[in-house]
Image (cartoon, rainbow, N blue to C red; front, side, top):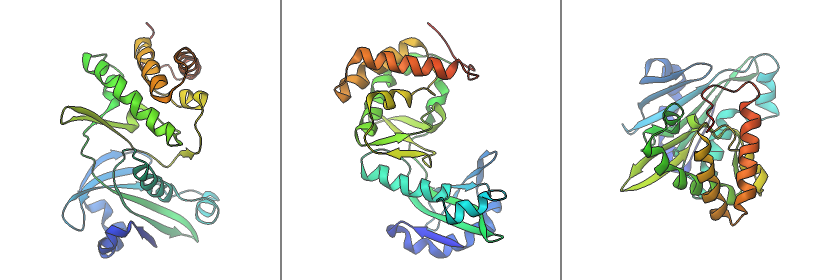
Length: 244
C-alpha cells in the first residue's frame, strides 16, 4: 500500500494506514456509483471527504500502476497545483493506492470538506434570479483558471461548488483528475464550457464577462461558446438543454 500526504498532514499517517480497512464502516455515504464518496472524521476529529476510486479491471490495473498515474494521485497533485495558482478546490490531504494481483486495486483521495455547500447543478432545471447573479463571478473565476494555464476537462455543473461568503460569490472545482496544464487559447477555453447546461442568455452574459476578463474579443468568444455548446448538446446529450 502506498500513502502520500501533503507535508502538513504527515501526522495523519497512522490514521491513513487504517483507512482502507475501515472505509466501509466510517462516516456517511454522499455518492455511491462506480466510485464511492464518504464524509467522515479525520485524524484530528475534523470532517474530511474520502473518495474511493473503483479498482481497474484486467490490463488497466497494470497500466494504472506502472504506466499511468492513478486517478487518486492525479486528483491529489492537481488539487495542490490549483491551490498554488489561486484556483479554489478542496484542500488535498493525501492519497492512497492499494495493490491487487500485482496491479492497482482501490485508490483513495482524502481532502478537507469544502466550506462551499452548493453545486451549480441546482440551476440546470431552474432558471432563477440568483443564477443571474452568479454568472459574472463564475465567468471571472473560469477566466482566471484559464489564464493560469489550467483546463478542467469535465467543467460541468456537478463539478462546480459555489456559495455566497461574506457577500461575495466563491467557487471551487472538484473531480480534478482530468486536467491539462499549459496555455489555454480562446477556442480551448470556450470548448471547455460545453458541458454547462443553461439558457442562451446565460452564455451571452458569461461570454461577455469571460472575454473582458481575458482581454479577448467578445463576439468571437460568444460564437465559440455557442458553437461548442450546440455541438455537444446535439449529439446525444440533450437532457435539460434549453433554447431561448
